Length: 160
Length: 194
Image (tube, rainbow over all chains, first blue to last red; front, side, top):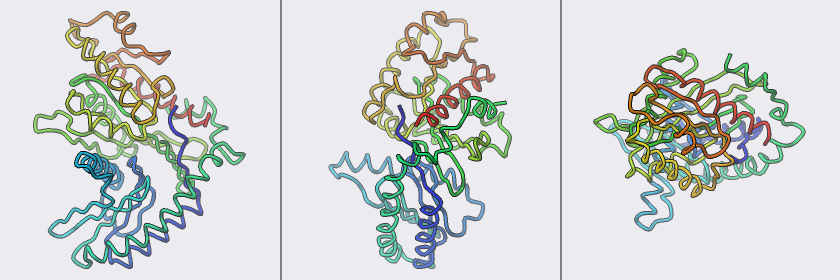
């Protein structure tokens, strides 16, 4: 079967939001994303404008997947961070276990500042995600699970 | 891996369309994209070569509706079909919740289907998945062409378990949504079991 679901609970989501909100301010970023390595957006803070954030998350994950495989081909275990520098906007991605901290910044910030601040935030994010992963198994099968109650009719109704 | 966010009340699942080169994986996604209401879909992203062959993946998010107060969002991916893009295919399978195998029904592609299905099983295994236990649908595409393998022969050769099998003509949409529904249902049923 597929792996057990990865569940973020309300309080964990709020903790993550507050870490990335602080990071966004501290490094004067335009926007900070937390993305699952499978390409699912976990949390966002900042100015997204009309950016397609779902596609952005999927492409960020694809990008890290590709560069991680390139790392292995040259004998590196993993590239812990990936940087793309543009003329105006740049992207810094830090790999934290099974998630990615993605900082989009412009000339109001610098790569050095982003790296330093992101490192600190990544420890906090890692701790929250570790707790979420631990809780996921118990939560999905526990008495609080709403998914055990999904009926065939519920599923059919999605396609009617 | 299904991702559930209790704060935003969302369920996110990943479905991968697999199959040999030019079997119609991207065409499936393109048809779903063209026939879905604006509110239910995001952009269709295609990382393709200059000749429109999939280089890394195609991607589109699709929102199906609400189950028990949770928005269900399916992320649909295709893999590149050509044999030499195997590294990319492995990456796309990471975190997969359900697989659609799109077979090309033409006689001359018979062996390519078998090779691709074998490649799918192998690549799933390297990611720690077992095709026999994963939500899975077999789609026999291009049924409108004259030189096709009979339905029974193709099914006998490619069916791995009791998975649903659909005949399809992806270019005109025949069987496309039946395939998607069948795999999505299996994914949600797995979620109930987990």
